[in-house]
Image (cartoon, rainbow, N blue to C red; front, side, top):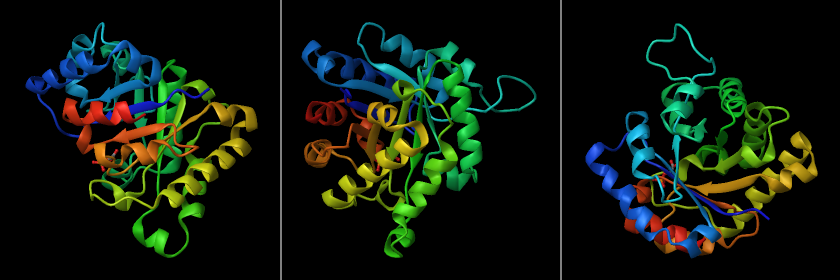
Length: 249
Ligand code: PGA
């Protein structure tokens, strides 16, 4: 009942010349693959409009990597959810660990941003994940549970809510948790969502794994029961790698 979602997070990478990759992804996103997995690419905000144009007719959705919680106003340099939607984005990544670290984003801020995105009719992809020190201290479940309780808006519509579990120590490092650890965390996340949103709603929320997903490991990770897709950083920059991961879904 949950269609896998393969989402690419380009982070602060990409100029207009890189949009060829989206065209390449579009060519490889065959009707058979479209039936099996949803594809989303989240370029930097400067490329959203052009990426959305490049994606027309391909079935690939375009998303953003952050937004402001307010709908407009005196917030120099920030972007409102409605502006991202207007530019062609249908989803927004929120609370990525790089934003939680670089911009000291709190759970409360992530929740306010997610509420703004959902109010705009867009999909909110809320990122959670523990640091290496927290995992080694046996606190991974507690940390992720606290992030979920703090970051997920009450009454978030399940169909437009996505949670991405991204262990901070796995992002960009080539390291991944063991398959058992990923499976256990995803099941735990669904249990917490059940308490927050209700059991039935929680069953409809897609929970993505993120952190060093590559063509070589995507198959075994995506085969896990509560893993409903992947949030892919480095390997989403090249159409060939990204589409290999999509085919593994
Ligand atoms: P990575 O990044 O795939 O390069 O590890 C994942 C992410 O940060 O979303």
